[in-house]
Image (cartoon, rainbow, N blue to C red):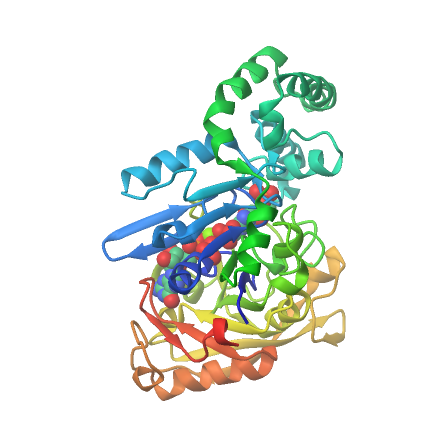
Length: 429
Ligand code: GDP
Ligand code: IMO
Ligand code: MG
C-alpha cells in the first residue's frame, strides 16, 4: 500500500509525533487532517526536541507538509509556531508547507467562548485545552465560519464578522464574559492575511497529483479514537472525528487513498482532562508511570492521569477507527514493574461487557476486570530488535495483540527516533 494514516488508539499523546517522524523518512508528503493547536506532538531527534501543534511532523524530515481542510487553524498560533521552529533550524516556507484554502479559522473569540463555557460548567467541565477548538468546529458546521480563503476577500470578512459577532457576543454576554469589537477583529485578520495567504491553495488538487504520480502520503492524526466526537467518551471528547476515515474528508482525497491505518497505543493508558477512565490508578504505581513516562501535557502542561493498559478500549478503537496494525509505544516505562494488569472486560451494573458502553453514567460506572501478567526484570529501554527485549516483555506484547485483535507492527522503546522495533513495514502492507 502506498499511503499510511497514523491515528491515536487511546485518549491522545500515544506518541503519534514520534511515529510520524520515524515513518516520514519513507514518505513524500505529510498531511494533518483534523484537530488544531490542541494537539501537541513531541519529536526527539538527537539533542533537539521539537514540539509541534499545527505543523505536520514530516517538516522535521524536510518533507512537504500539508494542513488539510479538516483542521481548524488559528492564524496567530500558526505563525508563532512557524517562527518558533525556524529558530530550531527548520525551514518552513510556502514551498515546504501548504494550507487548505477551505480550512476553518480559529479567532480569539473562540478561545474566549471555550474558556467561558468551561468556567460555567464548574465541576462538570470537560477539561478542554481552552484553544477554541470546539467553538470553531461549531461555527464550521453552523455555516458561519471564516475560512482561509476569506482572508483574500475583505468584504466577505466584514459580512461574516457581523454574523459571527451577532452569535458570539450574545453568548459571551450571557456567560458574563467580555464581548468583541468588529473593527479590531477585522484589522487583525487583514494584518494576518498577507502572512497566511502565501501558504494557501486547494490542497486536494496537489494531493490528487501526488497520488497519481505514485507519491507516498502519510496522514498524521491528532487526538485519538476515544476522543472522537462520535466514537469516544462523549461528551468528554474533542470536537472532530479522529478516526481514520477523517483523513479522506479532512484532506480532500477519496477513502481508498488512505491505505494502511496504523493505530498508536501506549503500553499503558493516559488521559488529560476530565471524563471516564476505568483503569486509572490513584496509587503509587500510577504516580510511577507518570514520573517515568514524563506524563505532562505538551500543550497545557497538565499532569496526565495514568493507568493500566485497557485492551477492551483499544479493541474498540481498532474496530471503530479502522486500524489495520498497531504501534505499541513506551514499553520501556513498564521496565521493572513486578506485575502488570491488562483490562479484559468491564463490570457495569451486574453485567459483564467487552466494550465501553455509550451512556455517560454507564461509562463512569464501568469497573475493569483484570488479567495479571508477570513483569520483567531486564530492560526494554532503547531496544531496537526483538532479541534485545526481555522474554516477558515479548509475552506482554503478544497478549495485547491477541486481546485487541490487531497485529502489533511496531514497538517503541524510547523517545528517540531509532528506539523502535519494526515488525512489519506499514508502507509495504
Ligand atoms: P502525541 O500527541 O501522540 O504525538 O504524543 P506526545 O508527543 O504528546 O506524547 C508522547 C511523549 O512520549 C513524548 O514526550 C515522546 O517524546 C515520548 N515518547 C514517544 N515514544 C516513546 C517511547 O517509546 N518511550 C518513551 N519513554 N517515551 C516515548
Ligand atoms: P494529541 O494530538 C490529549 C483533550 C483535552 C480535553 C478534550 C477536549 O497531542 O494527542 P479540546 O481542546 O480538544 O476541545 O479538548 O480533549 N485533548 C487531548 N488530550 N492529547 C491531545 O492531542 C488532545 N487534544 C485534546 O484535554 O480532555
Ligand atoms: Mg500530544
